[in-house]
Amino acid sequence: MRLDRANILVVEDNPGARELMASLLTRMGSAVTTAASVDEAMQHLRTDAACDLVLADIVLPGKSGLELARSGRRVRPGLPVIFVSGYPEAIATALEGGAVTVPKPVTWNRLKRVIQDALDDSPLEDR
Image (cartoon, rainbow, N blue to C red):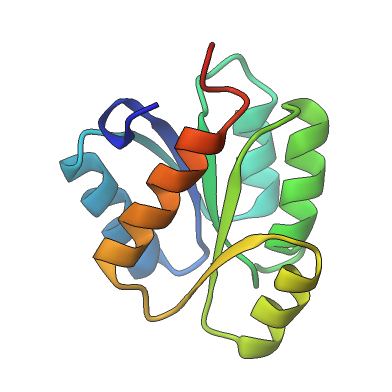
């Protein structure tokens, strides 16, 4: 699947970072939905709304991005999740579990590459 046709859920508690990521992805042609928390993201994932990939901060209030990935994949098996974080210890924990991570500050070219790779490898690609 191409980035310019993807439906991406951005989960970030920092409003500025959330809107910046959503704006950049929208300019690339992606359809973007945003959520400020795991609970809000899960409400979206439990609906029939399209979602090809989740881009989530690891450190979120209440529940972590790692918990979101586990819960989200129970609702939507095979859903690709990419984590972003400015906390090296959170990235290390995610990497131990085999997660795809991008450290903050994020460079747009790196983020685009990682998202496109995840979409190319997604088992949801054939939907």
